[in-house]
Length: 241
Image (cartoon, helix red, strand yellow):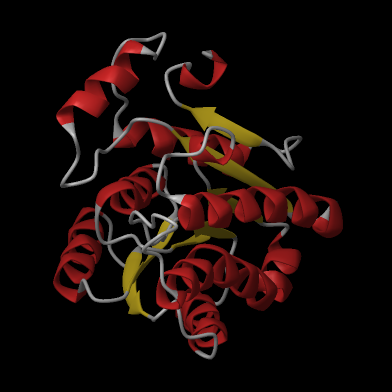
């Protein structure tokens, strides 16, 4: 398989799991990173060791709009094509209304919402040529906001809207879908009591695995008659009051 997938924020956590799964399915993978050069290069090296000339790592600051067309150009130039864009990278931190700053607003909006839009715009000629696909990573907090995370929730709600709008605008050549994770990876400074409460309200009664998100992303990339959809991967939590 020669198809090329660009995964943003792929050095760690969900992004790395997505990159590994796509690579295991035979795709060539562009591992995007910002600060995590060592982890991104190590992941690309491991993927290349498993299959030669199948992965590369590229750095870009997604908060800098001028860097985004360059990232797309470099990703497409590596193997002469680009078939998929997975907008996974995000900034996540609490922003209580009483304490939130303009920098909080700008940094989250720029990375979580503006970057996926501008990356999609820059990738459009390549994806149209290959009849490719865009997969955005949103969040179940779009519909059930997390307390004191208003800016983050707003960015992900915007990304959900962008997913549907681009699906309408870019069809039939390009499909656009999203995956909305639930309890998959807890924040490093997570509240164990809150985590237990969330799982108690989850029909499957447990947290998910990064591989669950990677499987959903793979489905969105490979389902030829699915576009404009947002797939909740949350153990059923989104159906509970």
